Image (cartoon, rainbow, N blue to C red; front, side, top):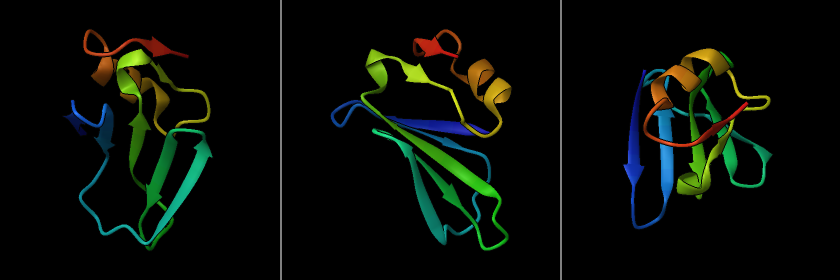
Length: 76
């Protein structure tokens, strides 16, 4: 698991894998989950990340929270 952050766009992306994305599902405003051909999550995009990251209904929630700890405000 890894992350990238675009400061200009204030967009955070958490990678679970580097598999090809075949489908994207917006789970709420500013949060989208990408899935591979097998329906497994590839990653999650969070917009306005500097304002805090809401993890409700996010796949691998505990691991994402641990990765973001100390970098972005996290709301569970």
